[in-house]
Image 1 (cartoon, chains in turn cyan, purple):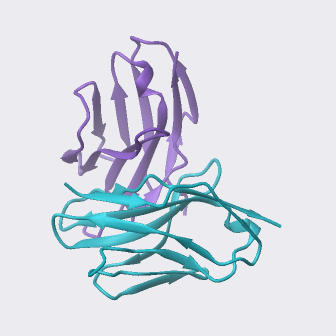
Image 2 (cartoon, chains in turn orange, purple):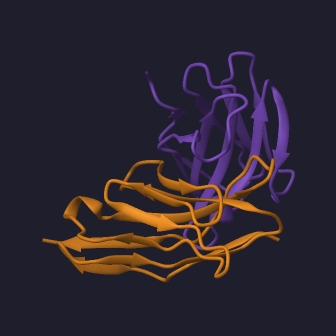
Length: 112
Length: 115
C-alpha cells in the first residue's frame, strides 16, 4: 500500500537557521505530493504541493522538490522564524483516490 | 467566506456511549472528508462523501459511520465508544471536480476524549 515516512521529531532550531525535514514515500501509482502545516489548536493548512517529477513546490519561503528517483519530497527553508513553529506533515494522494496518506508529522520549534 | 466549521470543539464521553460530530463545509463545497488524528497512529482517512453518497472509505470498523445532507453538511457517528477512539477528528471540504490536496480545506477539529 501507499505510505509516507517522515523524519522523526521534535526539531528545535534557532531563528534564522536552515531547516530540512525529510520525507520519503512508497506509492502504488504515480502520486501527487504535499506538505501540510498544523499550528497549535488549528486544522491542517496546505503549505505546498508538487504533482509530477522534478516539480518544485514553494510557499512562504518553504520549498520541496518531487524526486522520483529517490522517492523523496524533503521540505526546506533557508531561514526559519519563530512563527514557523508548528507540526509539518508530508502527504500523498494517488490517481483518482480522493484521500490523503499522511506521514507521522514533525514538530518544529523555533527559538528566538 | 467562512471556513470549515466543526462542532463541538471538545467532547467527553464514556466507554460504550455513542457520539455524533458535525461538519459544515465551505459554501459551495460538495465533498466532505473525515480524518482521525491520534499521537500513535497519526492522521488516518475515515471516509469521504459527495452529494450525499459515500465515495471512499478507510480501514475503520463499522462502528464508525457518516452521512451527508443535501446542503453538504456532514455528520460522523461513532457507536459503542472505546478508549482508543480518543482522538482529534478533522473534517475537510473541497469543491466538486477539483484535484485532491490543493483544494482541501480542513476544519479545526473536534477533540473527543473517551473515559
